[in-house]
Length: 108
Length: 108
Image (cartoon, rainbow over all chains, first blue to last red; front, top):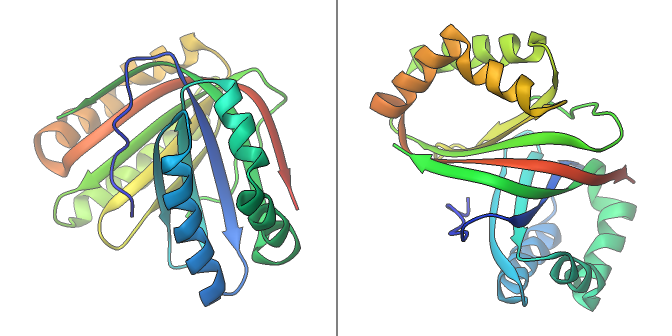
């Protein structure tokens, strides 16, 4: 649980990452927590929202100011290593979607 | 847990709904399940992905083909009633973001 991202007025960008974990592994939890801290400090990252259910299915949405911030985060060395481990070992399946946020509101 | 949405090639649209529930309530679970079924059958809905943690924080992403499909779902009578209950009773806080998906991929 990460709480709510405090994003500015649109437009900005969202990377929606949906995933089904394989068996739980402590190394995953540690790296996921470290990466979440790191992306939050990355230039152009506006916030992260993330939740994973007990069955291993999860959704993470990271918000960025622009395409170049997304590209430089994609290229981050620690993130690259996590992407490699995710592909080889951690995820049964995942989907990544890049979207431009056009409008938002909050409540109640 | 809803699994993965089988979306077509971009562009398409995503409505990202992040929320913090108040105390659990069986009536909420029933209406949420009914609405998820209903939106999936709605014209222009491409799929729904949703997960809520034990602490009541959740993320739901619904995908649509175009803006008019989003608008007609927003206006659905049963959905309007759920929006009213959500505002008055179910959610401590929520954020809604409307985004245009520009690119996607899946793995491993």
